[in-house]
Length: 428
Image (cartoon, rainbow, N blue to C red; front, side, top):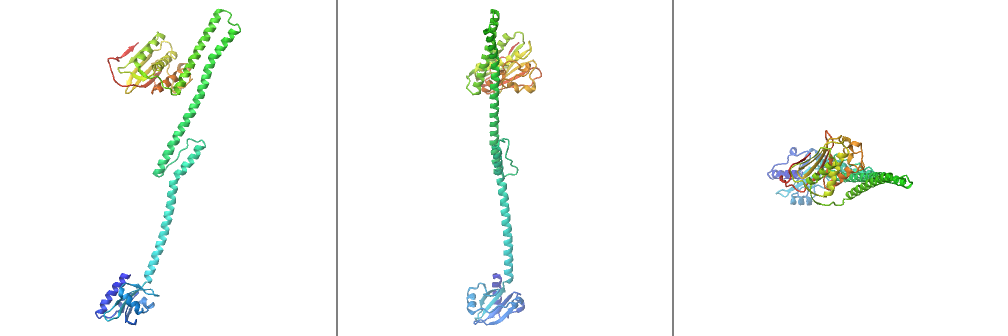
């Protein structure tokens, strides 16, 4: 508006200096042009329609002189006008003014619009901030809720994270991972406690049987039932058998206890091929009526381990074949190497192991049907599992169409094949 007023002033100033008169018809409706003398008297005037309704009063001479000196537009006191003044060459003053009513209304409208828009924007920002904060804090509320559920004993509860921010997702993942490990540890602990209770119950039952027999035979001797040497010898033989059975059971229990405690085994270089050959030779003496075979593929079958315990592994697996298969059933022991693992397979052609029992037969004191372990103490395969695990290996029951197939995997010491030393051995 100031630019318009000063521009109009300069234009009219040049027209008046050229001798032209003011033209009322060319003045805008809200504008006024006046020529004033040095005493403030209006000499000429051209006013628009609106300015006639609200006329501009003459300004004091001091105000005119100050405004002409600066050349800037100014607001007229006590009137809705904005004016600019210039001094003519003859000493008179040229005043060009414009009403500020429309401009003030426009400014007020703009302020109102900005106020409404600002309030709306603030409201949107507040609502958005609250929504974002609620969305951001939702995973924390989930974590708090989950923590309460965990303290109540529900270890399976987890934090949900659909649509959460990236940081909240990472927090939820970490929290869920921690809960998973806690649940696994509690599960492992409960399982270990249950295994301990089962172990104590099984051991007590197994020890009670020979002790009961020994006590019974002792009562017979005490009450004079053994009145002849033959009966006494028979009673003493049975007492010795039950004592040997109890001693074997105690030794097995002590071995499992040491393995459970993680006590280090003896470590030395063991040739598994020689160990298997010795075990098969012992088995041939115990079962001369069976077709026994040993197959060792060309490789260096060497590992670091306890030779006595590894010999016990092979002996237990081969002994199971004799115990749980009919007489004359063929038994095969195969030894090979795959990468860094030594693999020993004990295969027979007996009734085999039902699929539903392939995991349970490795549990302590488990004795299923007679064909899959119905006799004995029920510790043989669990000892095999513990010894193999202590050597960093594993033992499994592989699917087989005929008979049982036990596979033992043990880490080899190194791989330097020497076919000259490890030829294929086939004993039958």
